[in-house]
Length: 383
Image (cartoon, rainbow, N blue to C red; front, side, top):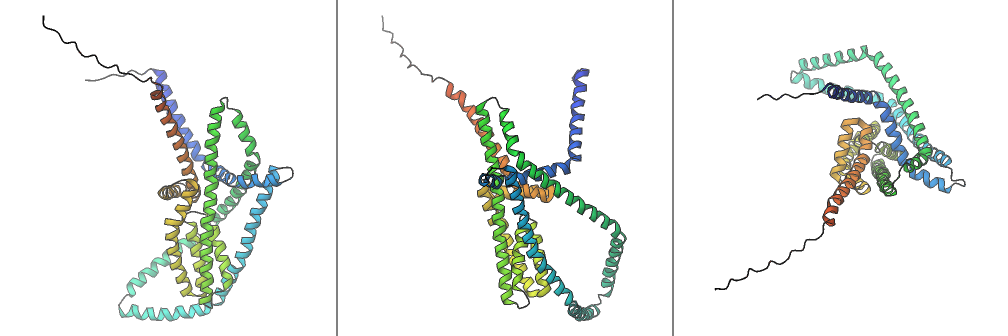
């Protein structure tokens, strides 16, 4: 049996207009993805710095929000400058020592190559070695042919990163200065006081999630930096080649890079291991063992438990949020995934609470039914 559905022209046109409009909106979001990421990062930084800026503004004579924001920026730049000043000189020193030791390294490599050559000749591995060398040469030739293009692309990416960073700093500054004014205008649009108070409470909970996440991440990074610096200091006592002054750059590098979830600590571990390898291979191996063990403890115990207490999420939810954020939006997604997950949990909790209250209200409003006792049937008497 065939069924015929009649659709008038107006409905047909509206349907396709909606489909086309939805597609154009997705395309516009794709074109503006970089701008949206910049705005999202700026908003995240503004929320993270809002509480310190508010405290500083209360201490100033005129309670100037602009002055408090400027002081907060100066403090952050001073800390970054101090870290840069204390980290870069040891890195340059270690690199210079490595360059000066290159002749001895080359001699050791030649000795090892001679032993390796004897093994190759003994087991008739020369064809496999020639094939591997030919593959390496082909890859090197291909890379050398594209070196100019790669260099230009790298320079362009670097300047784009600098421009985006400056734009993020300016937007964050303006958000910190104008944020309270915009919030007052937003709350002024409400006509129902009860709804405004409810929304204020929800926004306050979300704000606490963001600030709690920043505090928790700083705590995790501080623990990791302290452990890494202490291990390098102990290695300097065991190995004379390791300078004790390398402990502070180790702590600073670990602290800064550990602010990036999942991958940041790994990058810091590679840098520190390389610095130790310049001086002592056994010390570098010991640090790698420590790093692997500590990362397992941090990723599965320290970080999930600290962040779970700060943002009221379980350890599983924290790990799941970071994984989804990293695979969807990269490093930036990994950084903002945890507070976004905490905010979604709050919104879901509020929705479920209101839905439950709406379901219970009609039941409470119904009058209680009082059942009357059934009368017993009268017995018929015999005539």
